[in-house]
Image 1 (cartoon, helix red, strand yellow):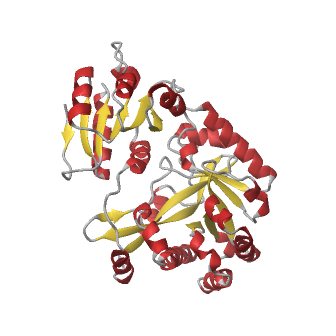
Image 2 (tube, one colour; image 1 turned 180 degrees about the vertical axis):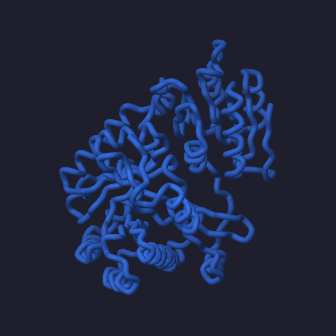
Image 3 (cartoon, helix red, strand yellow; image 1 turned 90 degrees about the horizontal axis):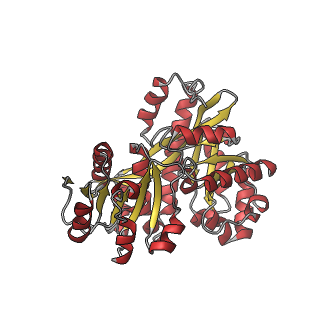
Length: 399
């Protein structure tokens, strides 16, 4: 049995159940970096013992391997009414059971399914949403972060499809908080506090200013990149936002078409008439608009033609399933076809493998984003990364 010590007590406990020592090692390292306490099991006896005594909150398991001797770990967990979230791994393509089938058959919650061989990017993507974010962030903490310059922006490259493969033509700006005690904190832990206490405007202004400053510098260096920024629904009450944004771009030497603002479906549905006015003002000034997280939750197709979007982004939960799930591939093709018939560009997030990137190229998806391409990184690292790959215009991922 292997254990990777982290902070104790820990509300995030991962049990890795597999007979592959390399998979065990890699998953343990990635999970420990994210803040999990980790235990592993490579046989039936260890598995049962760790479930009982380690009490995992998440189980990363290959049920075919662990159940090779007629032991069905999923049935065993279901009988014991296990509450741990499952992440399934398998070398089979496609993975034999879907999350819905496992839930119906065993009463277990499956958050994601990963195809082997495992890699650091797909593991981090699968493990991050299952973290129990128990740190309590207060309004005062967040105000101090803004006042003391603890915020920073990381940039994740986006690739654009062309006849020869893919090229890097843009980035998405992602807010981070360098907390003096907790280290790097991700937005899902503090955006709710910011929206509740009227700080979301300050955070959005920070990301926009930092991102446009970077784009301005890249323009001067001859490296023309597009910038995508998430826009909070709380800002849809500001009818002057489009004018201020247009002026800000002009003053920094950034063309409006270099900026795309990403809006979630829920934001677009909150106040349709007010949203339409503000989005129309932005589009009239040449700024791009993307409908974000499309394909999960309440997906209203009417948003695609009633609101002036220029792009639709397929949610990463679907993108991650492309290599192993035929239904996910069919959904992606359908969204690509629908988007193109409506005159919209289509971007797929959650691209975690070359298989996924190749499939997106074949079905005509315009843009791709995910850990297979690159993880989010500080601006200075992004410049070095692009230089190492031969420049933004020349970077290719053969399909």
